[in-house]
Length: 103
Image 1: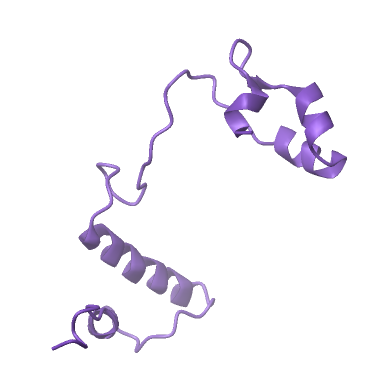
Image 2: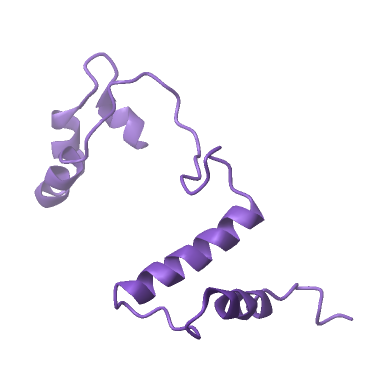
């Protein structure tokens, strides 16, 4: 059963009776805590790291560098050499084509 089958489309609320019968009480409570949208908009995939909402290799690459830097600045690691340009070279070296070993 899908999550959408457990939502009352008229009220935009969880079907509590259904959740209680299908899930362990602890899990039912966790599911009920998930906020639901009041919109009837269809679900869609969105890459929130780009302004257009579309994933590109470039946006993934930039996101990787940004998250690495944020981790370093907050003291959560991130490794790296200390400069964004050096880290960029390091990431590029890690990006190996699956065909490179065939040549």
